[in-house]
Image (cartoon, rainbow, N blue to C red):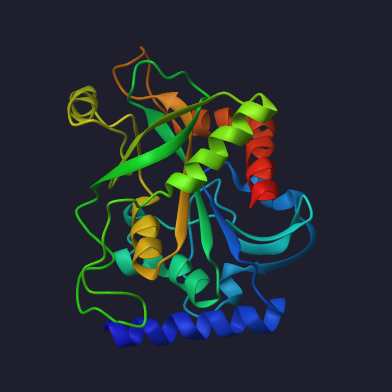
Length: 275
């Protein structure tokens, strides 16, 4: 698809959401595997299934309900995207960035990206919440590749500070005030859907990764391209292969996110209150 074609599809989706919602807040959150329960906490909410928005790619993964919820959290207007799409489902880089681009065209200024991730750093524990300081893109693709459309952003966007220092500082302050333990680290994105081998985890640790997952980076790249301020949060749902004995499973990921749901929501609400 040409960049012009992508722009027209993004605009069609944005116009549909404008008609259904009556407007879009300046803060949006993309909720990862098992973290979509936060959307249910919004008051006065309008829910729009992705299937009812033109050109919106559909997720097929358990733990990703597939709807946009616009409402209020702690008295602040927010938009929560309950579910995302991934490369391992067969989606293109452009499809993975589609929701972010729609949010940008709707006037969103700040984007909170959340995910479930495997712990590469052996100092981390299962259920830890990690503030993303930076990322390593090992997906083998980039949503900004191909013909550039200046209506989205510049040809060569700077990536020195993908994850806002200001928002990371706010997240730290909120965590301290609310008694939520957080760690910081570098998130590595891989294609999936298979989990990493122990050898791959040793490689990731060697190159400086603290956590690994299968999402987030395409959205962060597209957001930076459009000038959005980004905060990234990972829930360390399991220790990666080779760190602890035993196999990995998606069921364990969902169990852990369910267990830390209250802490996660407490942190998000505090951040939203500050913004």
